[in-house]
Length: 499
Image (cartoon, rainbow, N blue to C red; front, side):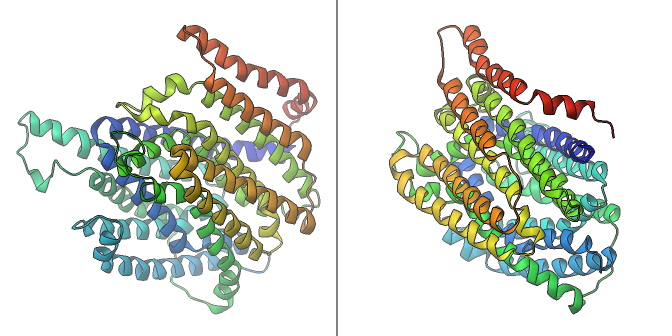
């Protein structure tokens, strides 16, 4: 139980930084929906989906490989760090240069003629992200959660600050005559350009701090270290590609698959902007999963040698499902007032009904992350590729088949469907190769009940807004009571345990 408390404490630190940081970052949706066109937001959705996909190629599973080999008994963690970082810096420069040179072709391919600069900036963002990956992983491995959190918060604060400066402050100063039109080449017709530029500046400025805190690396490329690391990481690369396809394919393909005039008054790119904005409302679930992943991945590897680790992993999964189910219901039943609060312009609320489905999809992504520990600690990472590849196929097929029919909901269902399939397959194979005594029946019941309450609570409404608020949240209270009744013994034992 003390191990669970330790994990909970680490997750709380990562979670607090993620919640504070993402809450600050989340406010950008208010800015984007209030100051940018739906077309610009659609471009933001598509380009950042591509960035998410290419990020996997730039890091090719080396973060997880670093955890695996830096915690091994036969290698010096410092040597592993030096080699992993040296390799990533070198490959990132090569890949980034390639994208930079191919920017005009990418711009035409994605229907951004004459905007090759967008993809040159994207190449720099990807390179900066990649050279930060291993230093951030080392901070996690060294249990420097506070330093990690400070760096992430600084990065997000810089990003938000540059967004506010470029999208709100400078246009306001131009209107007021404080600065001249065209100040430093400022263009009032830019939208997504300033989102990318803010990201680029924020990422570049944080590199020296993170490298300093993680420890500057000595360039080394030792075959004896990198060859087994690469062998371990290669299946994770393909897993990552398939996984990011699952997560981003709906946003990447949406505008190209949705028939024109499917939503009256909206172009396909405008509709993609609406979809992307509503997708952002599910970010609260995603940031909890991200915070959990930051703490849990090094924790799982450190505990893998413990003979009681399977029971520990099962308890972690159970606690994760309970907490995330509560969060899913809490967000879903309050979307009626949360949606308009963050989506500031007309037309965005049209997509609110997909948010409960997206929340459930993200929750199952977290379940999959818990389940995936078996192939990471048994070095059977080849299974990860096939599981996520099947999930990617499911996601792509559902998008192609359902988006032309159901629009926003078709895209949301692709996210849910792929993580259902991946979780089931991962569970079946995991129990074969590394049995873990999950509370499968109870966990599944909690997930189904929570999803049902989320959707019922979202659609439930009365003429009185105040009455609706209390009745909607009664769905959340019902689930809390259920948990307290069924988990009272474990809860008492957890709170009473010292250490």
